[in-house]
Amino acid sequence: MLDFINSVFAEYEDLLITVGVISAVVFVVSLLAMPFLLSKIPVDYFVQNKQYKVEIKGVSGLLIVAIKTIVGLVLLLAGIIMLVTPGQGIISILLGLFLLEFPGKRKLELKFINHEPTFKTLNWLRSKVNHPPFKR
Image (cartoon, rainbow, N blue to C red; front, side, top):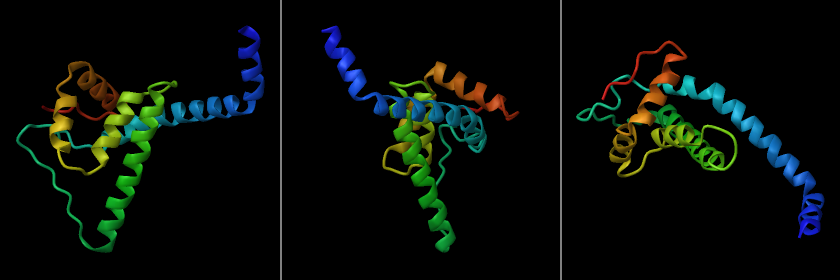
């Protein structure tokens, strides 16, 4: 059995090293990007009766929404990967969801933000860039 494991590691050594390097890079980038991205969310974003609507004004507005969607998808996928590799998986998933637009998004965001450990972590990360905590 041990010989089999050693042979698998030897056979896929390059792949394992590549996955390890990518994981380390994503981890460092997520540590640096999360506080900045959280600082861009308005303080009252999670207030129950407040709704934020996406307004597309012209080609530039469409481009901004497209970029937000791409960044949101990348964060969502990176967060899912970081659930099994080093990194801030849950926070990345949350930020990815915040950037995406889909039916039921607001309800899902409020459900996540009402989880006390998640709320405290988001506010702690916001404090790292000297921004006030979120209101709920």
